[in-house]
Image (cartoon, rainbow, N blue to C red; front, top):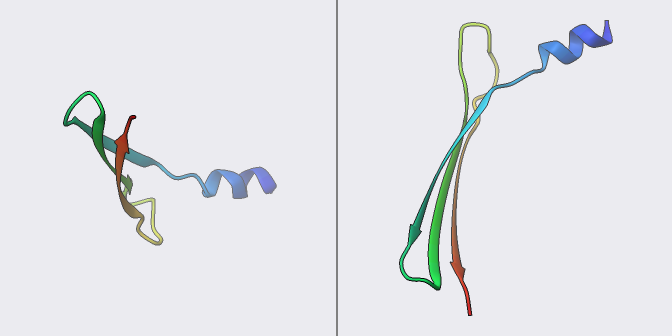
Length: 57
C-alpha cells in the first residue's frame, strides 16, 4: 500500500535555462521550471522563474 502511494505522487518537472555572458566577468542567468500536465496528472499547477546575476572579481 505504501508503494502505491509513492508511485501516485510522482511528478514530471521540466527545466529550461538561458545564460548570457555580457563580458568575461558578468553573467545573467534565467531559468524556468514547469510541471508537465497530462490527463492523468491532476492537481495544483507548478510554474517558477528565476533570475540571477553573477559578477567575478
